[in-house]
Length: 154
Image (cartoon, rainbow, N blue to C red; front, side):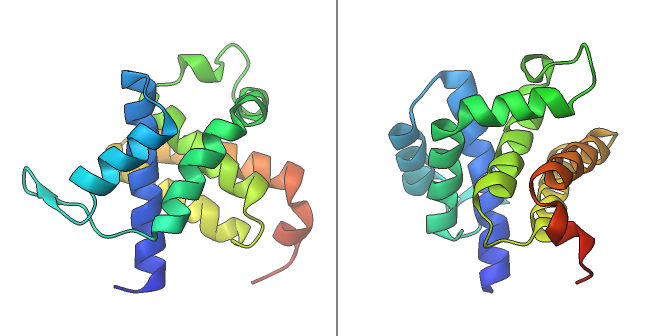
């Protein structure tokens, strides 16, 4: 499996772990242990959980939790008026939080890669408008924090 595929798997697993943390109200250590011991690299109910870049997986989860106040505030600002993050469905909220964390704190990952990857994660869960929402919100955040990078052509 390529490094790129392992990073994609890390993002998907991180979103799933963040969802689980939100629903079950578990901490970072419990969520990481649960995914690393019971899900990652295994087949469960016909779904294979590919081996992720473990460092990226752990960083996204820990970073979202550590920086949640900033991430949530900035996401609230980027979302439509009258539709705060707390009203967003739980999986979609996890996708947005993970993507926002990467945009703000993982400058080593190109903006376009981050946005594209999280749109793909959204497509894994949704068929309708949600991937477009993820694209629009993350693009707005990127324009506010990494505008210079977006101004240059790849």
